[in-house]
Length: 159
Image 1 (cartoon, rainbow, N blue to C red):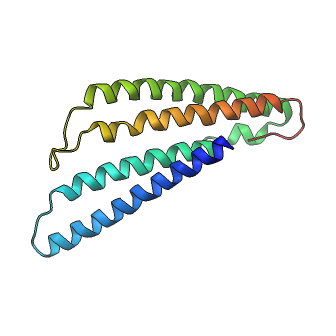
Image 2 (cartoon, rainbow, N blue to C red):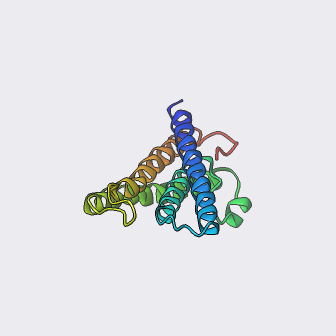
């Protein structure tokens, strides 16, 4: 239940930032066509796209729709396939924990930097997307591990 709610929140945030990205790009095209330079549009578009991608990446990890090499996975069956899933999940968990931890350090180091075109905004608002992505990836991967360990003796593989 918590996982579905968390995923829905992340998808909503990701879609909102994609909408901001799209609107900003449209504004940028229109203003350039009119001969006016709206310098803020490039940064807003870039940073909103970063947020959209990071929120989407975490959701894709939860749905197991992320990039993967599945040649070996498709050839295995039974407990060997489940073991490979668990090994992959443990590797993803370590990566996600590292991403979360280093993301927090990045936010602390770069929080007070400001945007070039909008100096009222801090770069911390952009960088905070990294530990949010890493933290939710930890939650999603841990839930996958728990589910796979619980269902390890069943015949069907839970992805």
